[in-house]
Image (cartoon, helix red, strand yellow):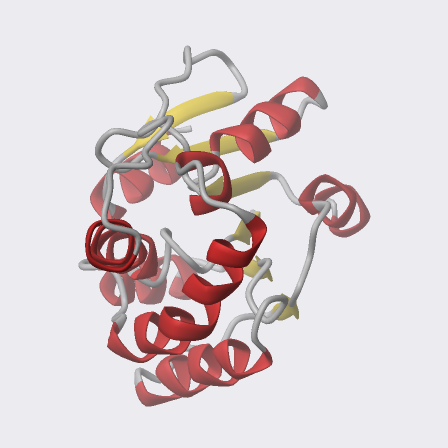
Amino acid sequence: MKIGIDLDGVVIDSETTFRTYEEIFDIDSLKGNNIIDREEPKFQSRYNWSNEQEEEFIKKYFLTVSKESNLMSGFVGVYNLLKKQGHKFVVITARGGFIKEMKDDAIRLLKENNIEFDKYYWNIDDKLEICQKENVELMIDDDWRIVQKLAENKIKALYFRDTNLKKLDENEYIKEVNNWGDIYRYIKTN
């Protein structure tokens, strides 16, 4: 099976780290509670920050988050099993867009853990286009908007849903997972 895979929030635990630093920034730097929607995965929609405040957050914390993040628990074992079984993995990620060094940091983390994917797409805005181009049979992503768009275009997606993020109704194209054991079970039984 050809599997498309997002990095942040799926392979790398950066989304949890981002949310921690978002809270620190909102409380300590902005001196308030600017959350407008806890179910949103990205800080631009999660908080009522100005463009200047978003830029300040990016400059102050993005590299810190990248360097503090690790691989998701269970990822290495499941990935190695799936690779041995012949599955192909195509990375489709927005990483590398805001700050180029974040791409380099992801590459470093993957190399340190002997992880090499079959193909990489960095700084991607339209994951649907890449999934179609690559004939991806299953995409794993943590952004509900991306998952929904893929499902609407008849591409199966595993929604790696973290705490507080928007719940989606499951159907033949959307299945919620919360860890790499769930992902393994889905791939092996479908």
